[in-house]
Image 1 (cartoon, rainbow, N blue to C red):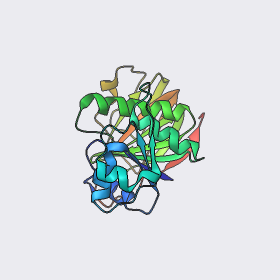
Image 2: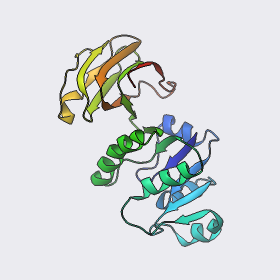
Image 3: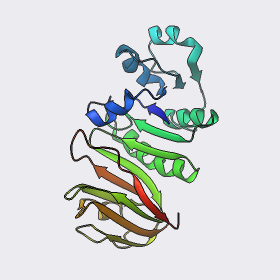
Image 4: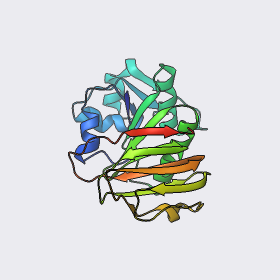
Length: 215
């Protein structure tokens, strides 16, 4: 597993902070390295176009700085491509929301692009965990836990264990603000969707997919 730290709001919730300090290697989008280094972190690599990296960090970590000048992709995707180029396909993304709404929305939407490339990816914010999924999935939850499902072209949507049974909606807002009723829930679908799980408490363990059909 590799942590990818983006240059949005720096993590403050214990969940993403715990992942950031778990000992896993950390690859920073260039601007994110400024704060990470100031907090005592040592990045495995710093990736991006270099436009927001301060000079002290640039000089100190020049041996692990990877400047990618092309503008067809954003820094998040440049960092994902770097990590995948090292043979790693299990990526946890932190710090990818906040500051500018266009960046937040773009970074969330990119999760599905990475998923469709065969990358095992998840994003943790200060409020929730986001995981792109395909097909029928059963996952651990806690009764009363808030969650949302964002459709990315899936059909025949259905669910078990949710307060509001889902259906084949296509607008993003239609799958928001749902709630778990038991200790596991199932989403049935043909196609791709994004699961957003709100944190229940600061010490909650990572959620794991229990079983998969039609992936």
